[in-house]
Image 1 (cartoon, helix red, strand yellow):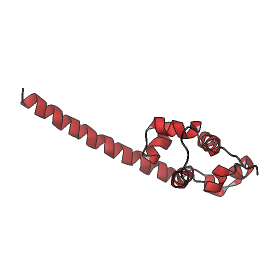
Image 2 (image 1 turned 180 degrees about the vertical axis):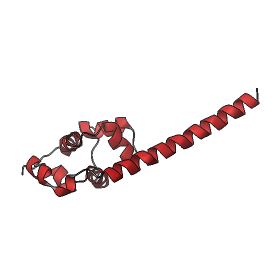
Image 3 (image 1 turned 45 degrees about the vertical axis):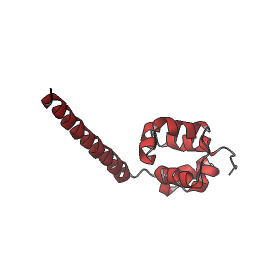
Length: 115
């Protein structure tokens, strides 16, 4: 294993290995896509908390982000995607969007009734 001074490169590699978008990662972290993009570009310094959050989403030990070894990533049983977590995240996003739609419909009805 080779230590890497720039964990943002490994975060991007691991995300790409899972074939996940930056938008997915940003949603899972509760930040904007631009804020996540800055993490992968190395423009944002990672806190230990954020590193742990990213490692949980990527389903790898935080050390694997700091010290990337593609051989161990491919042989790591923890690395298999957990579709139930993905489904839960998408269902949560759908519920939030449905609530926003209902709110917008209510606002639209109020504005139409006041005219």
